[in-house]
Length: 158
Image (cartoon, rainbow, N blue to C red):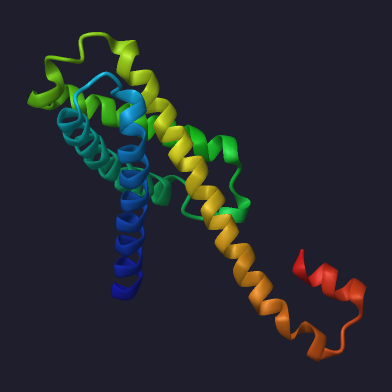
């Protein structure tokens, strides 16, 4: 039981780190027109919000989709959960004293954050599926030794 909780916490932290890196990288596009020092600082802050968004997304996904594996989830539904997470990050920013003065226009930052959340979640699903596919391919390397026909091998790897 404790091992399951540690695995979930590690997964949530990993998701947060992936989102933080993506959001930090998106900072120069979203925050164009700043000096280099301000841009780096604000991108780092955006990366921190991305970390929060990734961890929150992971927790919400774990509750909402707990009985489904990644290969059973649809990309649009996954992206919708991420978009909701991006909107949650916007609400967190509104509550933050640092950003409150600059967030007067709802659309100027909420839309990019919703898109960042949806894109980050879609990218996370793509990475997870790719890793799962790689594991399947690695597991299928011993198929030839089992004496299966070519058609049976293709069926097994699908």
